Length: 118
Image (cartoon, rainbow, N blue to C red):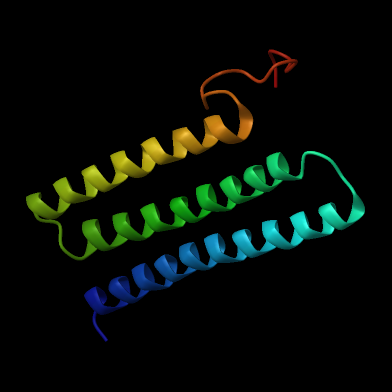
């Protein structure tokens, strides 16, 4: 097994991990929501969206890492790098949008009530 094969395998494993994180996060959020609904908690929808959004964000990070590994290490042509750049831009936009949905602020905005040294 050569270097290219190992890098391709690592990329596929990280891709699989990204998908698994999204699926596990969605199932976990759904189960937690059912538990909350049975317990009579309020704002179950908002908490479900936050948990689901966080799992999607983490899964996207894995998928971006896998794309970078495979593109840079296996096929570093100008075309593949440009395709990678477009994929990263789209996923970055999705990450920012999800962060706004989850927290109600952009990633570069300071958290309300946070101290300047933290």
